[in-house]
Image 1 (cartoon, rainbow, N blue to C red):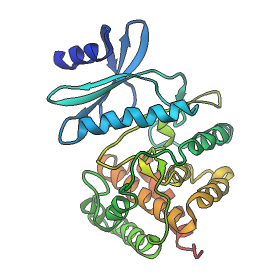
Image 2: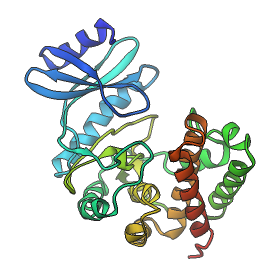
Image 3: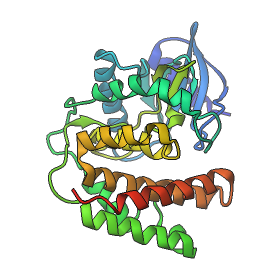
Image 4: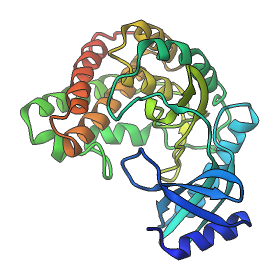
Length: 301
């Protein structure tokens, strides 16, 4: 149950009564809630408060507003605010269902094929509208490959098993070999454009959701990373794999695309092994990791 102070702060932020319906059905963090704001269906999303969090949330609303102004199917924010414990945003609920049918499950190839053109067009709307003069891209990403991240991409998880240790070593090698040279830094970047964050109605794209600014300087860099993310999560779909490799490489180059995929291998395999060991999702993502690493290791250009 949400603390009353959060509900009251949310109502004050939007100037209307906020009625909590309950937690959303999907999402591992338990930080999103279905609500009603007056007559509107909306989503209340919480982030633990701390240094820079409120500023990052304010920046997030502005960045997503830029995309919406370009015609991207992103959320319409009704308001944002904070308490001592959390920062929050309220956004109108977008229509559609997740492209990912169930957590970790592959997407129907026909549905991917139908949604993909509009999704790639939406990613193009992210080009060259970042707000930072000196974004942290791609330093933070290379740091996750070299030493792990804060709460994700954990070396301790990967080093605990022989199979994942081998995956980690291959990821590190790819990052060291290809993670240098010119790279795009001027685009808005979603950072987690997985099928779980793409909405559609019968193959028609209706929304790109779950935008975040998880740390200072995030959400700006190379939009090719978002294409690489779609590629990773659909890598076992042969009908779209080559098309997505081509698009990601056209934006970022094959070398940086390989680095992005290596980061995604580390991020998703580590998360699945830590939270859902030997589940269907874990086995599927380790299989995808092998396919991805094999292809990345053949990149030469």
